[in-house]
Each structure stands twice: as C-alpha cells, then as structure tokens.
Image (cartoon, rainbow, N blue to C red; front, side, top):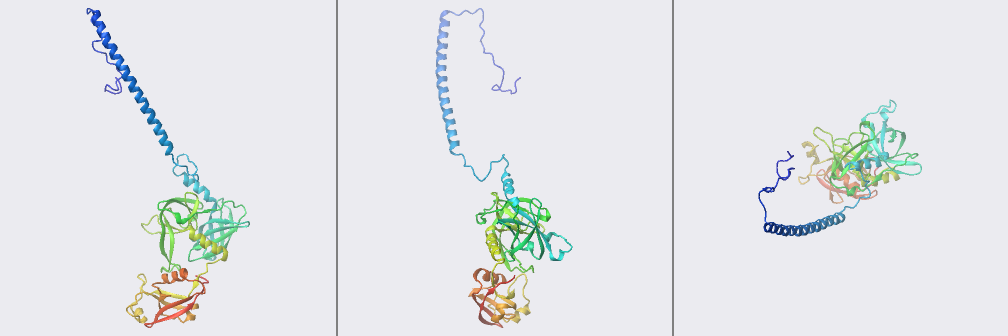
Length: 415
C-alpha cells in the first residue's frame, strides 16, 4: 500500500481494461488497418499538441525566471557600510557598538571627605564616566556633578581594572555635569560623540557603566522619549527650582550608572546617564542628559572650570506653590492686591539684590516686563535671557504697593 490512498499519489499502475484479446477472435486486415490509421492519427495529434504546450510552458518559465531575477537584482537593498555583516544574530550590532565604546567608559570612586580616613565606600561614592578627549599628557572624562560632589579623593578604574588618580577640572551643579582629567599614558580609545538631536522614538540604545560597583556593565533598551523636560530640586529640599531636558530610556539604569554612557548602535555616545525614577510599581524610567548639551557644558568647564551665570542674590519661595502653599496669615502679611496671584516672595536678599534695596517679603512679579510666576521661572530667565553685567529691571510689590528697581547682575560664584 502506498503512503496515500488517493489515486494521484498511488504507486500502483492500473491495468488497462480489455488489453488482452480473446484467442478465438481474429481481426481482419481491414479492421487492423482502420485501427492502425486512427491510432497513427491520434498519436500525431498528441505529439503536435504536446510539443506546442511544452514550448509555450518553456517560454513562460524562462520569462518568469528571467523577470524574477531581474526584479530581485533591481530591488537588492544597499549595504550599510557602518554595520559589519553578522552571522544572522539580530543583536550583533549591540555587540559591536558595546565593543567599540567599552574601553572609553570608566568607573569612578569618590572617597568623600567624611570617609577619607576610614576609606569607607558606599553606593553614593560610586559612579561612571566617559573618556571623550585626549591630548599628549591628559585624558578628559565626563561624569555627573552629583558623582563627585563633596569629594575628598577621586579615582578612576579603567576597563582593564587599572586604577588611576583623577583631578577635578570643573563642575556645574545646574547642568549636573563635571569634567575630570587623568594621565593619558596608555589610553588608546576615546568615545565618539553622536548628535543627540537626531535621536528617534524607539531607537535601540545601550547603557554602559558601574551600577552598584559592578563595573563595565551593559544594559540595552530603546529611546522612550527624545526630549523630556523634568523638574529637579537643585538644593535637594523637595522644592523644584530647575528643569532638566533629558532623553528618556527603558534601558536599566541603577545607582552607579550615573555619568556613564548612553550609546546608539553606531557606537556613539548620545547621552550621559544621570538619574532614574525609583518607586513602587515604577519600571523602565531612566534619563540621560543629551550629548549636545553635555559637550557644550564640558567645553566651557574644560576652559574655565565653571559655567559663568548671572547672579541676582535672592532666596525665595513661590507665592502660589501647590506643594508648599503659604499659610493664610502669611498671605495677609504681604497685603497684596487681589489681582496678584503669582510671583516670588523674597525671604532674603544678598549681593546685587540687597544693594538694589530688595527686602524680606517683597513679591517679585516681573523681570524686564516679563511675568515671573515662580522661583523656577526666575532662575530660567536669569540663566537663559541675561548675562553678567546686564541691568535687570525688576517689578515687585511691597506692602501692597507696586515698585520698580534696576539691578546690575554680577557673576554667580557658586550654586
């Protein structure tokens, strides 16, 4: 029995019925001739038809094959020269990108002043950095300000495990960027910096750093958002007094990843990992400072050791802050008109503000006729729209009476 029961796949050849002649039956020459003629004619017709069909099929098959080959040749995709051919592994580009940038990512150990003698390390003393520049004698490293804050001694651990002493070149609390330098001897790899403005939603990225002291660690994810603006508290007092533009990613970022590299699949650094949101039920919310912002700040830090910003000299609280609202008796003490809903209440005035006559409980509402609604808007106006030496016109209320004063801005010495 064959594998299939139907006749098409049967291995049996059926016997033609009536094939055997009865011995007693004799054919006359006429009958034989007639049958022979009809069979010859049928055979000729079949041969001609078969030949024609075979020729047509052959032509069609040849045309079809030729067309397919031509089409396939015309539609063959261009080879991306930056990507090395892999063995079919869809993650091969991650492997290649990581191999390209890994030697330029270092671990940073911050021996804080309080722990200097005891040589005690905790999680807050660990971070990451990226070698972005090298000259004859020094190699320069980008990291976060909060990684090296309150440092006593800084050390850098290379990818091969070698430890080197690091020197602080400059730091900026507002942008959370710092630059270190180390001896350049033996350093052969410097990270390539990409263009963070060209990032796309869903683009694959990798994070390399020193999470929880596990140096040279790699995680991967996607770009969840290209330009996310998040509020931050520069003084860590729970009051949001600045905004940071960041790249949002779901690549795992943990304590110690700060200052490390966020890398695209071309092996270029497109961000410096800076923070994550850690709370019950929260996953995949990590943030990196865009490389374009980082390099602009790093260049000034390398040249001057600091970022020069305008300084007014007021310590303030928001008039209308939903998180830290003023008490009713405090509002009455300000004696403001009912039309004034937003502004900044001066708690203390020093430097230029004090010299201009600003006092406790003055309520600032405008800078150069632009509304000031919060401490955040006050700081952003100073940093983004003024420069050192400018004359700033301030509109404020004192005991319910509107006043104006002009202040000459000085250089901000320290945040």
